[in-house]
Length: 303
Ligand code: PSU
Ligand code: MN
Image (cartoon, rainbow, N blue to C red):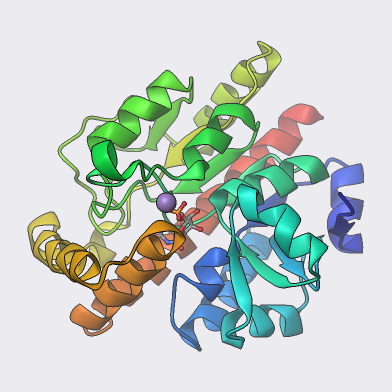
């Protein structure tokens, strides 16, 4: 596949300097305009302040791009013609010369093609509630099972079945690290009712696990779950009720397939009057800080 890597990103990779990949579905289908574009810019600035080069990934006019201009971020955030692109959608959107916003799965794949090892996002896809009958399991999990990129997120939202998501990650051989806590976080909340599969404290410990995994010849991703900062948290009981309501609405409207996650995210922002968006932006920023530190640690150890 013809992939276009921005010169700044290419230079950093060639010199073993830290690079952090960022996804674009969160911009086009995860948050409303204009907060989405502001978030994308701020996150890039945080990565830079942490000493790493940001590489936001998307498909533009059918070309997968690693590292975007400011105008491209604006287009992704504001155009209604941007398709949500998971791995299965990549060939179609490329062949037709369309614009596409990449999910965790397709961003991981493109980051890996470019040689980027650290990727920052907000929330992972996973096993949806009711997956036993809907079969709705995000391709993010498949990709984590096979593509060697560390994904920094705030855990898994309870729009998903968190327990089944963790079980599936175990089956796929994906280490799930929780930074600085003993409980696996659920995006808006630091708690989920599930213990941290593995606890680490800080970027040096994360980088050590990544180095150990990949030097053992164990390909595949690593989940780095970074709990939302205490001051930005929405308590699990409070958001739980809202998530139930959003799930009920999705069901009633017959929302299925790739539209489920964007619908639920949008509906939760509506019901909370924007409070969930504020929390979402805060956690992505915290993840960007950690991701830049992890990338810096990895460059150090690469010499
Ligand atoms: N969860 C969020 N925000 C998001 C997503 C998930 O809190 O923006 C996006 C990510 O791009 C993720 C995708 O990879 O949704 C998962 O979609 P699906 O469940 O259709 O695989
Ligand atoms: Mn799905």
